[in-house]
Length: 178
Image 1 (tube, rainbow, N blue to C red):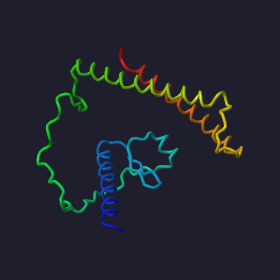
Image 2: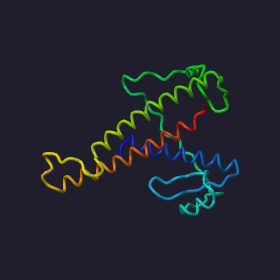
Image 3: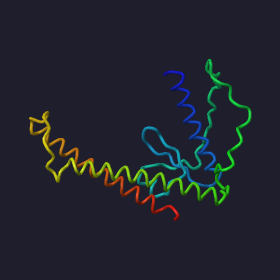
Image 4: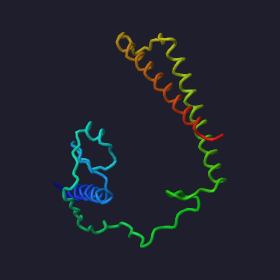
């Protein structure tokens, strides 16, 4: 096993174990769910855990393994000693955002989504035009009828995907404040 792979595996185990230890201290049951990769979580309800065939590890000793310290790669920039200050409008959990900044974000989001919706509707119109109610014109490379049928099926699937994308964009736009 390579060093990087071994290191990543150890870090994953350490992270899972440390989160399990914190959850046990908080009084939540911690579950170990099978499968690649094995999942340690406290975010499941007992019924979800039972459905996923997870076992509780409450009371089981949790070991946190520290990964080996690595030297920075040649040519890599050294890590900054202090984190960079956050931007004035950056949102952290629990912070309030200035109402004017939030309105600007909402306006930008609405503009971006409406532009995307317009582009998707144009693409849908082009696909429907090419589809021609299920009878698109045959191309020169479609002497074999199966190729033609495959293209018709692909067009039909593309139209359904575009319609689903458009519906999702409309839902997202409807969620935004006016």
